[in-house]
Image (cartoon, rainbow, N blue to C red; front, side):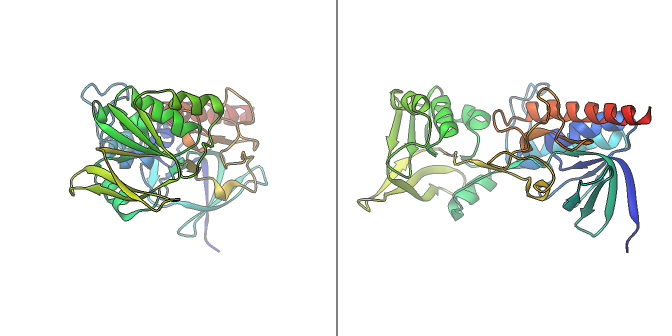
Length: 316
């Protein structure tokens, strides 16, 4: 049996939430240990330009911002580790976690900052332009600004798709919304909002065949009507996917209360507490509403402060 490592504070996952929690926990002398997770730096590492995070007047790339946050966490002696947690046991007062290298960790407090992953269509062309930052995005609020005065396409039929399409309509000359079926999944009020917006065109029964581009950026979208079989090319420079997010919370489901879509539920509104004492959550693993770097960072601060108070209460 491998040696058990005992830690005061274990942070599972990186990104703005995890790194902010690490900075606060380290400064409170909780000697945090962080496992960066499957995607070190989180979703922002796929974002080319971040212009809406305070303190960066010229903007910053997502990867650069994550490297700066990591350096700041390490400056206060956070033990940042490459790798991920594969299993947990939160049934007792000591929170047991196992890393991908087999190491067993017993943590007095745990901050879950595993985030959520945007769901994509899975097309090769979509992934190509997503990876090179050339016009594919899963966040209109983050990236819509770069498509001012241009034509964009958005895929989705739920509330968030309608909200993002409406947001894009204020920036773009035209927004084409691709709806897979002949109805919206969104609430009536949200669906009506896009239907009544002049520069949003809605194409029902329409699937994406391919994201078209010149190798550098997106130039259009090839779509197919599922009833007639007819294929059409829609010119656009931005292709937005709004078909949902999947929170990365599967390993916690036996111990932590999740909602029907897998987001962690707060045990007490206004805190970062979960239903398990000593386990806290920060960022997109619990936030299905805002999903911004700045809100994730804020909840990271909350989680570290809540963890610090939890340890102080146990010491007395």
